[in-house]
Image: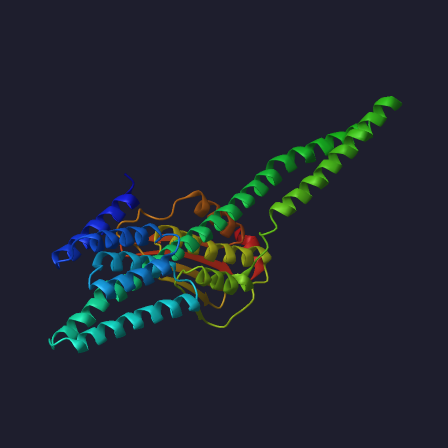
Length: 352
């Protein structure tokens, strides 16, 4: 028996037994059990219709406690628009009015508070719990999508760098050797073959540069795109706070500007991956001769130590190539990624 079938059976038995304890017998009890089973069976496909059916059964019988909790949770989990909110709120208000009307007709004064507590426990709380679980799942889905996108871009860049460093070097050697053969004393037919070899090598190098350029299409953002990067992370559900100190000065060195973007990108990716839901702080501090970049987040107790991966190693090389320094500070309570980038290109070239 599947979990869902077991849940349906448990709800039917619990609510039918509750109605039986109130003195209900015969075919009405059997019809109620069938109605509860059908409502539970349709809960996943028609959550709002099942919730309305559960409210109706609760008003008619005074029971259906387990059914209300299950259908309320599922309805809250499926709320995705204002129309859904209006339908659910209208159903709950109607249920409250029916309960209060029934209490007014009864002689017990304390039943009003019991009825209101019943609404809170069996309808409002399951609805809110279902909505909370749905929001948390959507939050985690967006975070996973953000991490997957960053990993995909990082893999594209790795492939581009490998192709540029290895194949580009080999093709350059082939072109140089072919050019040397072109000017050497060779028979006419061999000279034509060497010329064709040189042309093919240059064409291959050109195509390689085009492919690398396509793979590195996302390798162009710089310091000015950090705001958009933070905004996209916030839209994906990450609680990111940005801080800016000092007088903003553009990084005239494109390598340093791109390295600044990659530092923030890597810091956000690590924070989302290892400390999901924790607040993230991105700080840009302009000093007289350097830009200090910091991305920090609280260190979760159950998370493994961050840092040390291939992404951070590659980022360290990128920052060093721009004349800067990158440091990782995995403290007991906070993980911090800090980079220093010079504001003057000449300093970057000297440091490199």
